[in-house]
Amino acid sequence: MELFQLEYFLEAARQRNFTRAAARLHLAQAALSEQIRKLETELGTPLFNRGRRETVLTTAGETLRLHAEALLERAAAARRAVQDVAGLRGGRLSIGAIPSVSACLLPAAIAAFRQRHPLVELSLFEGTSEAVAQWVESGRVELGVVQLPTSGGSFEAEVLFTEPFVALIAAGHPVARQRSVSLAKLADEPFVFYKGRARDTALAACRAAGFEPRIACESSELETVRSLVAAGLGIAILPQLATRQPVANCVAVRLRGDPVEREVALLSRAGHTASPGAAVFRAMLSAGCRAPL
Image 1: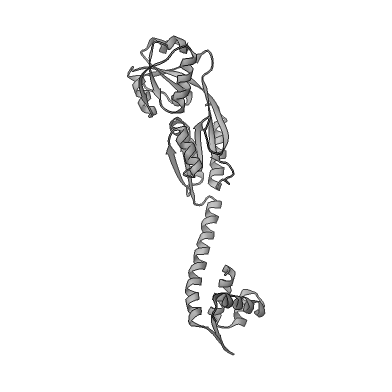
Image 2: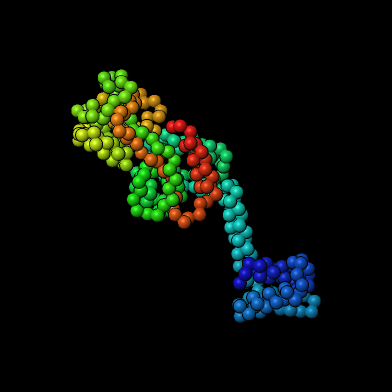
């Protein structure tokens, strides 16, 4: 049963005459009659009582008419919904991101996207790199911003930027007056660690500098880490992006020596065709990340 056959059927029912219905449909009467016969054969029952002057629906035809009208209405609604999504006049876009990116980079990109496409419903989910990668793989989010590398899964990864780590230090600390410091000079200091992939990078850097850091506290909340540093609990080794906005009573000091860096990438599922909204947001975010952070 095809949608066009239902359209032909309904027009014949409205006109109560195959000749008039065929004319309205710009068909030959024989073509219309053939399609109606195919419907009747498929359903196993006559749909019309054919008379010399008028053709009226049988009881089975009346039943089909009710369902045909509903089906065609739903098909039209589906067509409109798809066209709205394609034209960014509707639909939904879900994005996952690590906290430093969602707090410091995405707000501007999301605001620009919403200004251009206000009818697209946009949702943002925040988690670790591992969690975001899992969300992309499961389809919970269409795009994910993570710190590389990713483990498992089949992704298409576009590197957005590479950034250094810096030492976030309380303003009253003697090192806060320096323009740069080596990690080795901080070996006797307590540290506040920011959980997630950034923690792994910071811990590896401390060990490469020849010491095991004394951890005073760990938190998965960026604001908590910054507040604890400001209170003098310890020093945090953070991605530069996390200190992009001024932090009260804190100073970001550049690290000397071997670079401590991370790559931040945009993930999508391999082999998955991006929605129009995702394609536009990807392009906007990529363009925005070309500017210096």
